[in-house]
Image: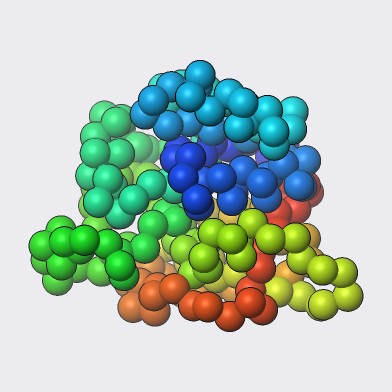
Length: 202
């Protein structure tokens, strides 16, 4: 992955905060934003260290790789934030499994198919939606071997980029193309899957 790649997290709830901790722990620069503005998270971002920077939503959406860490019900509004998603990689961390009114939103579609429609033109990668936030953010004890994080995308290039980014001491598992992956996206509670980001930019 190019050292010039710009990463952003949109969403500062449990999952967004967990992702920010992973970036900070790996020493990878990332911006983070929400709809309330950077002042609302400046102290929180500072607590994560110098590699995490609070920015406006507009600045975050200008990034190359955007982690969509928002409630599932807000995906459509998020999609309307840009007129054109071409050239963007969007990592969809949402999970419709427990979302209110998910059935009414999906209308028979898989959540990954819905995200691809709403974010038309973006390369969608489904990842980091299988674990509770506290496990996602947890430090992996040394000596426990490799851990697994599931990464799926219709774009081999985008999926490979996120897989290369995501792991220090665990093995990314490419879970296939999005429709197949969407059918097994319900959260798993196994503590054996604790992803950590790598500071390598292949």
